[in-house]
Image (tube, rainbow, N blue to C red; front, side, top):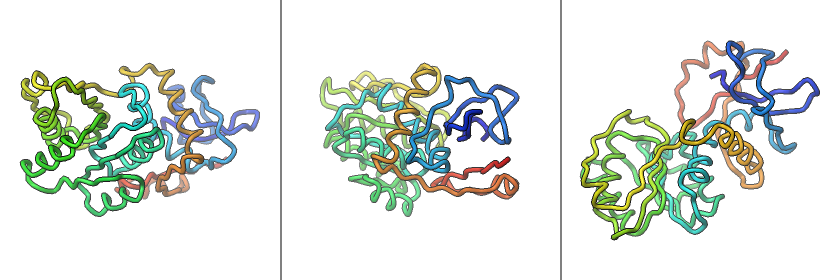
Length: 260
């Protein structure tokens, strides 16, 4: 909170901005941001959607374009597709040309909603570990090129193990780690990497140069309307921030509105 937003420059032009100069943040009437981190907004993109979609959408856009190098016609598995970032990862994969998108999630009801956003297959993560691994093996055996993982933890362990068991000799699987909602650590048997062509990588500031993250956000913002990307939002006046702070809904982005 406070690291990005939508506002107007001194000349009145609308921009999305990120990483204001400390100690100034975006939860204020005015802030200071480097010009290189201010991106002009398309005229047909509204302020609320731009403010809500940039951060969670950028995570998968950069993962696909900068790390996984997603190609048209490939199959993508989004591990953890029910929260805002994962839901966008499904939509963005389709926009970038994925032929098939598999979505997993622990919230079964929310997972049903992901199917309406473009997921071709949904895999609920509600069974025991062995059953989850078997579900993964069935999908991986049919062919998966890229995994975007927002969960880490047990599901990532089972997914990587299943990928090694289902792997064809020398056929790579690009596994991109983008979040750790289920936990910061996993136990990974060394044989999983020795017995497969899994390419394990992360996506975040450090693995992708900051200027290319900025470019990814710019590309995303210009694609929102043409691609029909959807994100659920809850606009809230800054005066209600104390109430909004305690809300817990991973499928909907809260956007604080600051007016002069």
